[in-house]
Length: 525
Image (cartoon, rainbow, N blue to C red):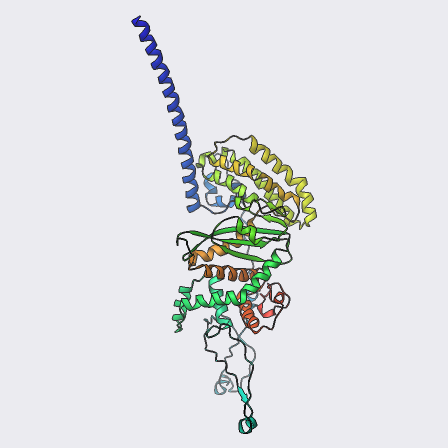
């Protein structure tokens, strides 16, 4: 009887041990998955901080291996080939400097001998000019600041002064001030805006630069000028550009962070957003609009795009869902590819060649290579539409079939890449609906990057008014640049023309208008 009880106890202890062992193994497996996840994240963060930013795969970036190619390819067992030495001289390209200087004005400085020195040293005869020697150099003239005083005559009638009870007064016409009671001029406001929004030079550095030229102009004054000029004169241009943008059939959208310090009811550390809307490559002219909003809510693009009917290029952010039946959302293959690229980069060097993520990358590389070929062939939208259905769609179909059959841990880098691609499939495949659509949203990313470069210099906006002014000025400046205009000259032209109300039709002042004077246009190369 005692023996039987002991056996039962042993059996119970064995079962408990087995259960505990299973639990421990499951716990170890979870920890291994977690450690692998952290290793992937650490490797990816290291690459983002120290590695190359390009997403090109190694096969497409072989030139990076040139410096260690000798060590990698050397084989001492093979005999040395017979060498034939060939030498040649490369002729220097003629006219390169002249091409570089052809757009600049030339100021000629003449040097002559005085009359008493124009005597021949051999026969003492008078010497004449037989030709010229010359050299060229670049002369840099720093910004010049002058005070321009507008003075207009005031007229009255002498007869009325002597004999009348009232004396009429007539003033000569003069241009309206840009900002009443201010020193701001069209050129000074345009210069400050160009320095900040084109050259990414924050106001405090402009203040220091002007002070070094004995000009006292505080950053607060410059900020006030920009807000007033943006609100009074550029806002109507912005709204007119927005009206034209919403009439397009294809639009790109993206967003990025912006810190605004003094937003009502919000902490100074709360993140705000700058949204970007722009035309696609199929439009007659480029339009780039930035829109400051305090949050990343999907209500902002829904409100901004009210009245738009067509295709919307965007990334996988859920805030772009529910924009209405009139808008067809088009996904970004570059974003989907990036997930697989990050998966490969998160792995140790010895494991990169054998991972499944390389298979996914190969599918994307084929798709983008085909797009390059379509672009080289200058295909019309209808031709591109047919070519994509014939060549590109079978590749993406094969990719999604492979992705749905590939197993990976959900939290692993590969698992997240597969989940993103499969979740975005319906939006990604919309690119095959119209030949005007693009494979990626890179067009919007390039435009939002221009704002990010400036943001990295001035870091934040002090108040919502400043953030709104920045979005309007950025929109006008970047749209002007993409339409071949010089930002400073274009802004100065607007500030001279709009306050005088000589142009009731703002469409004549838009960056793509043929009425813009040639002095505002960049000279074609």
